Figure 1 (cartoon, helix red, strand yellow):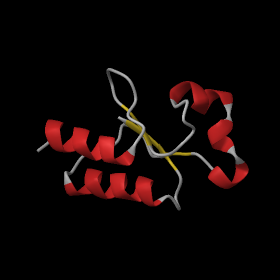
Figure 2 (figure 1 turned 45 degrees about the horizontal axis):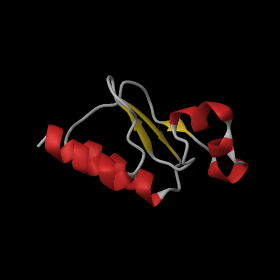
Figure 3 (figure 1 turned 120 degrees about the vertical axis):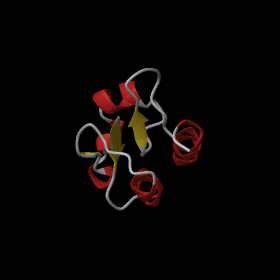
Figure 4 (figure 1 turned 180 degrees about the vertical axis):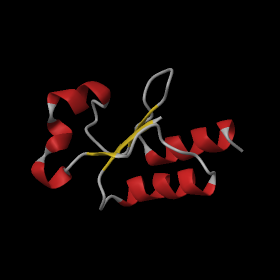
Length: 80
């Protein structure tokens, strides 16, 4: 799993907390997307998430999850 986020984003923080509570580790450190510099509108991130919002959780298989509540629901269903 890879997590794209911004350090001041409450939605990203919510996902980080859920990952920690479930004892899940990311494959690599969180990939920062600097919202103040407009990095969310870059071509690479827009290919990953056309909505240009953080957080985005990229799974080993399947499409990335791009809403914090969807990510939390996925984590609860797959890692109870």
